[in-house]
Length: 168
Image 1 (cartoon, rainbow, N blue to C red):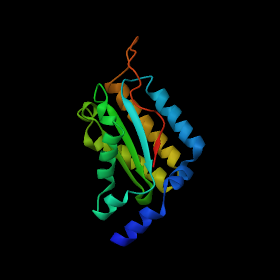
Image 2 (image 1 turned 60 degrees about the horizontal axis):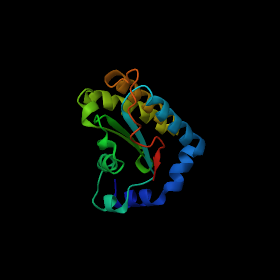
Image 3 (image 1 turned 180 degrees about the vertical axis):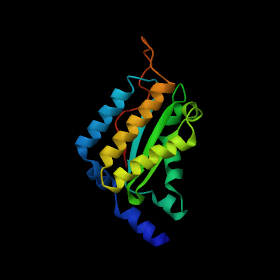
């Protein structure tokens, strides 16, 4: 993509566009979905929606994947006790989806499975159904975490990360 066109596309959108794409009701429903999910496993799920990449990323030609990995660290998804945090990242300007999983869950789930999850969200996003796509992604990650990190009876592991989607 032309560097200037990419720059324009990313700078045209801002946090208000990201919030408008989902709406306050959708953000609250996604937060509740993440919170309910985490009652059944010890993993942590974060959803991050970003309108456009920061200017520094655009100047150096960075990818959505690079940004997702950075946010994985900034949002402290990597810092969970059992290394089983998962970030679901949506970049609106490029309609890109990335899933970044910490080593505890990533070593148990093949890369093709993560790619299948991303592919499943892509159709919903192309249709403008951001809430539906993100909801299905949360459900898919929930199923993996319940399989590999189920919450046992009497387990009082704390909620280590906010459930509310991060919107930038």
